[in-house]
Image (cartoon, rainbow, N blue to C red; front, side):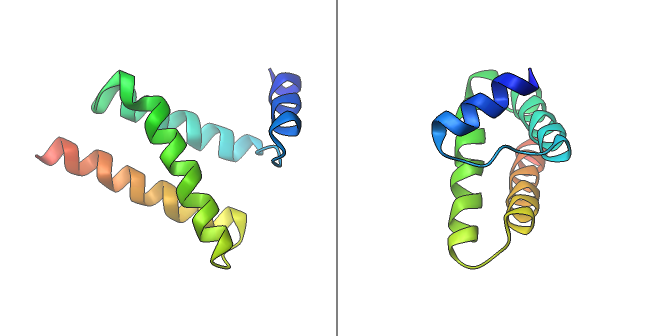
Length: 83
């Protein structure tokens, strides 16, 4: 699996994500799938990637951008449960 992800990252022209980021991404994808709507999972993860890129373009490090965007998405998931 790791080889495929590294190949895909290279093909897409992006840096591979580390194990910790993979674990967090899979966790939030699971939360969207089971807590909001399964079919929204790829869209939510795409939007997470867009948010990370926007924050990196604004000067944040990749790790910081991922962490803060992930926290925002997790809040959106939680607010859906509260509604």
